[in-house]
Length: 248
Image 1 (cartoon, one colour):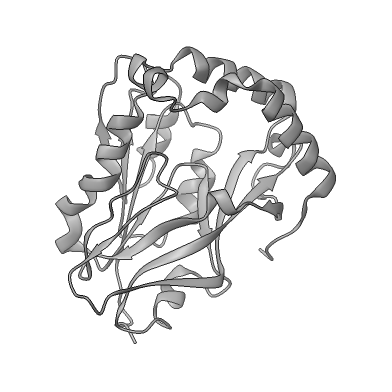
Image 2 (cartoon, one colour; image 1 turned 135 degrees about the vertical axis):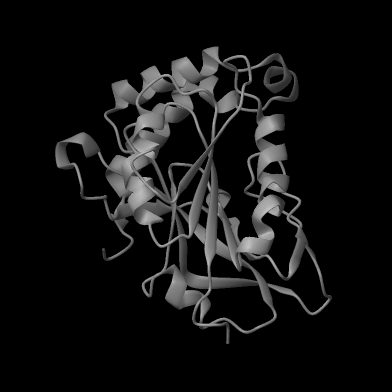
């Protein structure tokens, strides 16, 4: 068993996330510190961050472009700066909420001492318009294996996470050969991207496509922002097939 006083740091990247950011910050309120690498947001994101005493803001520039190579560098290495200050690190995007019925702090107390990394099962959550029900997160979604993520890891047992681009694949290097990766069916990655009316999502995708950097275009990173047909098909599928995933 782990100590009952386990501490958590959350690491994420932000660009103009004023709508969902309050949900994110409330969800991870149990964390000792939420470290947000802000990519020069031009909306109210930074003002919202400053309302939370456990948030540390780290500004950085990408010349107003999406740079997945820089994002990957941050997610693979920035946590090492504060590894000595916490027991567990959570690496997620703003629209990703990890969930367990016990709550994350209570859940980690159930883990064996050799568990270094916990992999969560991915779900694409859905709401036709979350703005009509502010304050209440949708509990419906659909399983999405591609969203599985090794998002929670023990700083004493992990040397490197070795995330690949997008961070849904990783090849952790442990401090000991006894360290293990653990998958728990009740430990979920809830992805809250499909929470707006379809026209608003199309508008956001077009904006993101315009921000793709030459590095992204050359490597095919973020190409989904140019695929409106895939977005529409997925939206319609979720609208028809979503089911209750969690009990909040």
